Length: 490
Ligand code: ATP
Image (cartoon, rainbow, N blue to C red; front, side, top):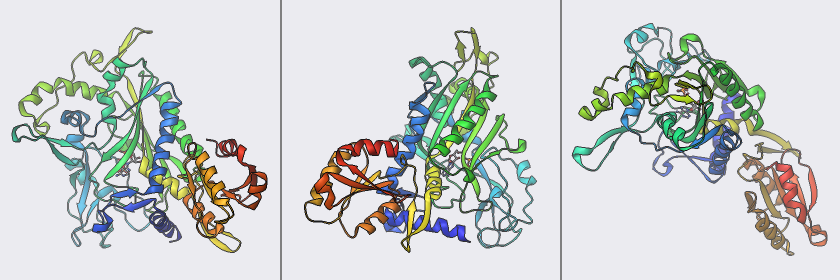
């Protein structure tokens, strides 16, 4: 049970230090919704920025996008979500708790099944034998109702007048905004296949079961790339993206022993996917610990072809304005030359690009980085909690303290703070014993702290204490900015 305690410790630390709070807590909280506090907002922004920097800024084959959350309902018809984005769920006959069938276990610690959110039909439901499965809520074995599909998209209404009100969905993934803008990006930029479009943004899913703090919530942030390539080169790009994304986590300090790939079995793959792999992290909860952090899929040309079908169906949509009553038109015979195809100037070939999709969760990454960084050790017989964040993720890069609150030391420390705050997220603190101030920063994950002491007045030097090694360097204040740049690699 030690591992469970670890997640509890992290939840407690997050609340105590202002990383993450329960949403609407003053009204009793809203299930599965969380707010990021002052330190959490910085951490989350740093995770987003680290992703954007390696994926967009440092690559010349990827451009960014920021699409609206509300989109035309035909987007979700064409993508398949309007008809099929559902989980297979069952209800316990004893306690009435609704659970995802693929989350039911035979006994504590047993393996879960793995399924994607995909089309669920009666045939599939019959295949699930629930006679040995345990209700996660009351523990009753094998007493479940017939599995049913539970739709995951949140519905909302748009429009002020009764006759032009339209039912829309909050997007359940950011990817479709990218496909819907594929033509726009081609026509307005100089990109050439192979290239990718990246986006970070909120997604919404009315998840059946939410769990484990910010691991699975109903509102969450995704970071997705759709990488368009020529059919035939897709396997090479799939491999490239597997390595690239795995290394992203490692380069941000995640421990290798806590990360692994899990290839999807053939029967687990969505019908359009040629291959799919999860990057999994060893989270301190759940059954086998290992849980999905990011999915990477070879989706072939499924999405662009589906949107070509959607575009062909638009006339029918104007008649009903209700996608649930619509049948998507079949593909045109010359779909390969359709509006979302690509003409390769060099080879003079036209094709519908294949897509490799690395799809990560920002909140889930934040949780993994928190878990990975969390440590407890002892200094001079005193226990400390420390978050060993990579410097680029640390919410505060350096704490700045006068050793005592007198003798002109606060003024010197304030000047240093004013000098550095334009370059690094800094925190000035003059309250309480310096040891306690160090420990507060250790718990916030601050990589180093600067202390101004009596000697600083004599020789313009300060001490810089390292969070992990606890070593103290004496540094001239004139050199501080460069010293920190080198030390933090920022
Ligand atoms: P699962 O099967 O666990 O519900 P999924 O395979 O449907 O997830 P994807 O659609 O592949 O998830 O989403 C890509 C990424 O988005 C996930 O790897 C995860 O990091 C993040 N994500 C998906 N759903 C949620 C959620 N409800 N809360 C937080 N993050 C999520």
